[in-house]
Amino acid sequence: MNQSKNTKEHILDVSLKLFSEKTYYGASIRDIAKAIDKRESSIYNHFKSKEEIFEQLILKFSSRNFGPLILTDQLINIISKPEKFFILLSENLIHFWNSEEERMFIKILLAKNSNGESKKYYSIENYLNDFKALSEFIFREMISHKFIKKMDVVVLSQEFISPLFLAAIELILGLKSETIQKSLIKNHVEFFWNSVKK
Image (cartoon, rainbow, N blue to C red):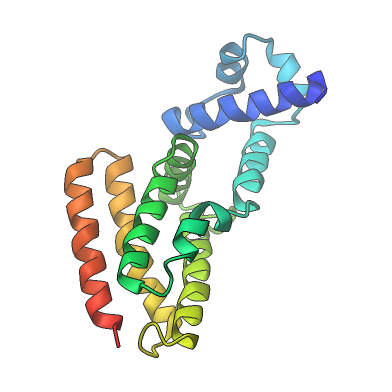
């Protein structure tokens, strides 16, 4: 990897951190340059503007294939045991959303949505819909193999993902402790399983 690519990636990494801490509007090109110990002009050698940095961050995160990170081999191996599957799937989702980079990205999306800019950019709704699409695929497979009742996969996805994502946001924002979240997740999975089991 060449020096220019390394610098560009470093700028994106630092911008992710600053945008999540100070918001997009609160972080300046000067802040980014200071954080990477470069002149402001060197930022402009890689990006035309702060908006372009933001757009590149959004593209980087929105174009990922996170499926394999959540649907691990361990999880796939227990799909025929739905209750255990739902517990592990919930843990994998919360673990993913609670990773350092993901926490920062979610904070950026939440801040952008609060400014009413969700129409212009990839939004928290788009982000959540990506996870719902993954869970719709999972539920279709579980229904086709008769592991769970035949139900509307869109509704199942909504009912499964939304409470987990809310729990992740509360954890990210420090509104609830990890111990409380684990208890809430356990209760959610138990309730969900009782609703879908054959």
